[in-house]
Length: 69
Image (cartoon, rainbow, N blue to C red; front, side, top):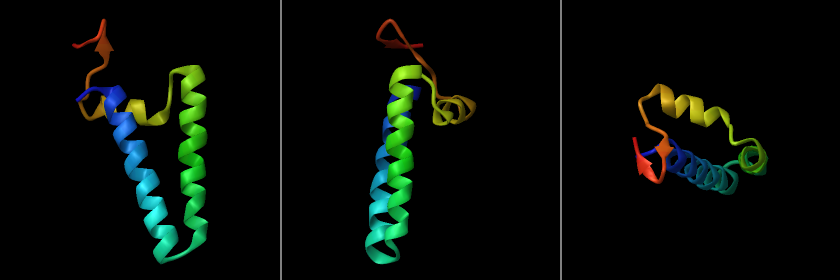
């Protein structure tokens, strides 16, 4: 798995988790969904998000020329 796919996986899991928590516990958990969405939006413009650093630290590789390094 690459960093880019890991970021998408992490964002998807966080959105689904926050929706489940909002459904079963409190609607305030939807703020986590807002945070994930804003983070994805800013990363589209800056090509950086905190999750990328975390995923690199655990050993995921970046994509180069369409092929994982």
